Amino acid sequence: MIQKNLVILISSIFLFTGCSTLGLLGPRQIETVSKPIQIDIMQPDLPRPVELTAPKWFVVSEAKIVNPCKKVIQEDGSEKRPKVCDKAEKENPDWPDGYTYLDRFLDEMKKQNNGDIVFVATSVGDYKVMAEDMQELKRYLKQLGEVVLYYRDVTMPNGDKGLGVGIKTND
Image 1: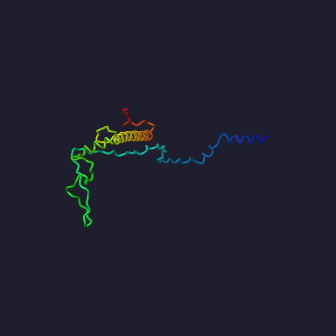
Image 2 (image 1 turned 135 degrees about the vertical axis):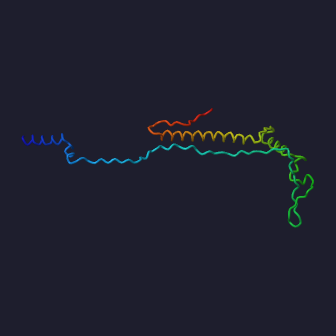
Image 3 (image 1 turned 90 degrees about the vertical axis):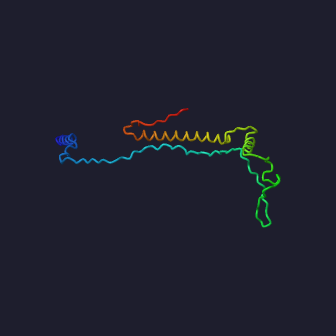
């Protein structure tokens, strides 16, 4: 019984004193090290690239179009254009005399637009391309601005919201 009490006494001493007896051996040196930590920032999806199409522009004037004579092959094998020729021997025999760039432009626009003339110095299809390109640029800039705002907010200390330029839409 005495042995049992002795074992209980010794085990309770070790239990209550715990690691404090190790502290009698001397204080341990605590080492503090400062080094930067890599912050893992989720990468947002970048906006898809801008896909623009170049519109065609027309230069229209009332200058007369030169309708040259067809080339004639000489006896030596070289080609030469006569200065004067019959209308049937011209490159474009269906053009009337005094045919201008304006006349040709109006004829081409009538063919493209079923007889109607829309005079905007570019074709209607190319004007549509310009409008689509403008919308594409607006989309790209808006999405890129959202990415910039995301990074600004993520990298601010203590979760503060950054001050600066915001995104405004005038729809």
